[in-house]
Length: 287
Image 1 (cartoon, one colour):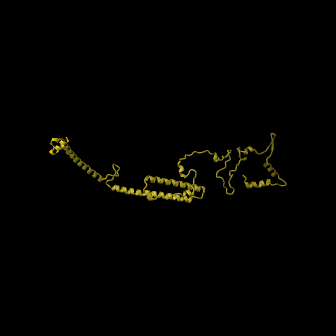
Image 2: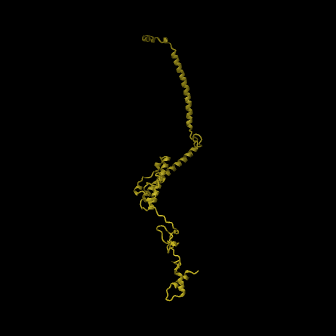
Image 3: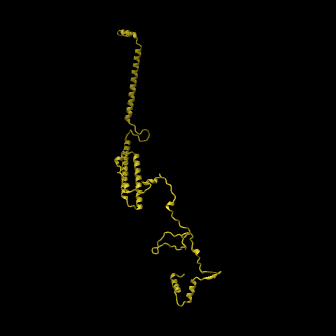
């Protein structure tokens, strides 16, 4: 098969105008030019130039001719272009939908993802609002808090850091150029509070370890989990002594009650006529 370099001189010789054309050049030109013939009374060309084969796209706005170039859109210098082959199908390309024509998506107003934002209408707080914060919690203040309070405060700090990180991401994505310093200072205050919570819990853990060691050496403490964990010995001795005293006092009280009953019986048996003489006139006068 002849190369392109070999064909170019022959084409140039054929197409080059001359005052006296040769027979060979005339024959080649006759082969290249379309020849019109009469067929069934209609004038037709030798080669098919039917426009229906070239017009493949029929939808509104489509191009009139088919594009067979596989390198359409590529740069002739850098040989760069689209990363995928362009479509030459007859299907129309999709058109973007206006935001007002999009369907309304219903969202849960109490969804957990809303906690990543300070407000449902804005994604980034102004610097004046980020700078409005107090000081971090100190270790001395957190020592008086219970375990539940420390647990709640820890997750409040986690939520605040998530909000600050979301605002910082949106600020960088939108290239706003403000509020980064205020957000970093606010995040530093929250991190100091979380560090103080860890310090407080570490102290309590060390104290618990020391208490376990003391309990293992104390005979009054039972760490086996069976029965009472703490049984003081002095309390049992005092309880035994108290029971003995109550028994002694009870026996003495019964004897005294018996003597009092005997005295009452003797008084009921006394005869009024046997009273002393000094009391007789007084009794007669009363009568």
